[in-house]
Image 1 (cartoon, rainbow, N blue to C red):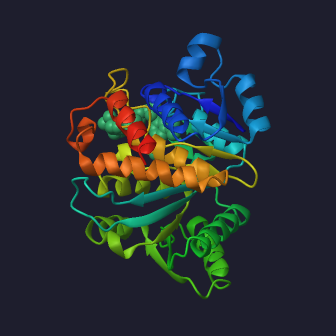
Image 2 (image 1 turned 30 degrees about the horizontal axis):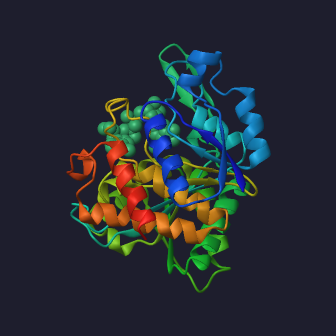
Length: 334
Ligand code: NAI
Ligand code: MG
């Protein structure tokens, strides 16, 4: 039995997290959930965005599944997601973006993995007004974090039998900060001659990805470009409802979809649960239960390919719970 912290989250979070719990039950994943919420919903109940109980639970269990959390708007409020990633030093954000058969999309051959640095860059939270009408945000890039994410990306490429790592940057303009990032990735790349290595400037990368996504394999990026390119890449394979993710550190991992709390569809049973369910499959891989993880992926892909029980973002007319039920059935029949 694995004890896992479950953070249902805000907006569509509770709906898609409940899908995860059902699917992991259907696959007999032997998980005991410690359910403790964080974010807006938690704040309204407890007065705290991140209750101490939640911090203790993640520190004890070392593995968490997190639904999306609404970022509080306004000065003085830091993103809960960024806070958790920094606190637990889950420095690698891993987001596999792969075409799924049956999904309507201009591309059918996308298979890339985004490895986003998760702890620094413009997300370090160093922002202030210098004087009235002049604001400053500080972009922090360190040799330590850049080398660490580069090592992660190349080790990942080797472990997953990938062929190429592309570093994405803007070192032509930010010569010192992105220059340092690039220097670190370049140095690490020399230790992995079996993996091809290339560098692409981030604006060109956007154009390349929407024209030739099949050319890319593993991408390694500083935090902000990683965030933006992740949503762009999700658009190549059918949208945010489909792309899973994991925040991985040396001994703590928090699994969550790329998407946010989607306030526009929250509470309506409309959200596509796939991204969260596939994130949970990544969690089972991490826990060493690839058998269950593969069963989940097969169940999800079967339902999407059959196309009868899909949510509206995929062109279907099913609810979140109907699609979840169909996935559970597909798993149970496998
Ligand atoms: P979003 O990702 O929540 O939504 C963007 C668009 O994608 C919306 O039209 C939404 O309906 C659609 N979408 C997202 N997930 C979907 C799903 N599972 N099924 C069907 N459609 C889906 O991004 P947005 O609106 O910019 O952010 C909303 C809130 O979420 C903000 O407070 C933001 O800070 C937060 N956020 C939290 C994240 C996290 O907890 N990891 C990640 C990204 C955003
Ligand atoms: Mg994002």
